[in-house]
View: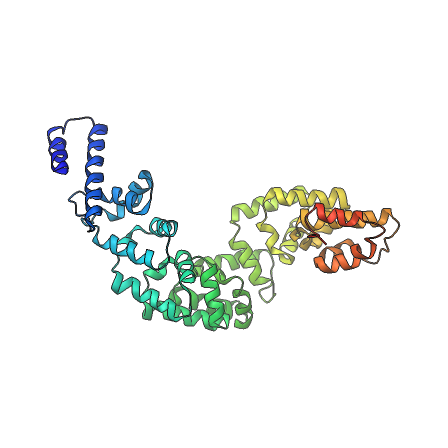
Length: 389
């Protein structure tokens, strides 16, 4: 009765200002959805905008978010399918935040058939040995699984990655950890990229497999994008047979050409030549992924405090990979303290000291002197390195 009255009001006041009309319409659909929810059945409405109210009430979206995500759902005239999808997801471990994330990624998930689409995917993932919480993690990171056909798409991808990574366990680990892991097509992307790296770049598939265990995204690029990365690595003079070649490709993937050129110009201001820049990248490619501020602070510390020349740092660019606050500064202060106390033997260069593990560093330079120089432990505790030892 109330809904009919509001519809009549809306018709009679078609010339009302738009704001007032929208307010009345919102009241209408809010009333309709609440009445339907109370009756325990799906809402049916002739107005496509009723999904805005549905997303607010059923999923917890804000009105502005609901307005945005309802656009692909404008064809719906009933909440029957969305109700079924939400009930299924909630019964399989998805909380409100997980459901909102999924819908925000692709609102049309609310339109899928539960029995024909969702249930088989969840059963397949359970059969792989994944727990309910694992399945939630996998789907939130690789939501495309809900769209893939199990036999035509998911199984070939699973078998392909299993052959590359070496075990089903490693594939499942990547599925749980990485987003978009299962998005790339076997025929259009994975196979062509592997063939390119093997046949044209001369990289053994075994070496590719080793790198893929930590960087599976390397062969998930579009083939033309991978070729562009290889061209950039070639410009740096990185030999394709080098074991650092694939890591260089991965680093370049994370740094656009524009950002890379900005880093090059930045390092030139510290006195690096063109050849030194290329050499530094070839030896420790991941340093180009750092922010300019981080690079600046590291370069300034090594030059102004430790006393290294820019050319020395370029030759040993791996120095830039160490954490300044947790490794470089505290270890430098420890060595300086030992020199001050006359306990420094000079047996190790600072470059070697930085490479030592935390345990080995403590055993060699701190623990033997903890009675006579307790300040050493204080230095490490202040920097959060010592962990209470």
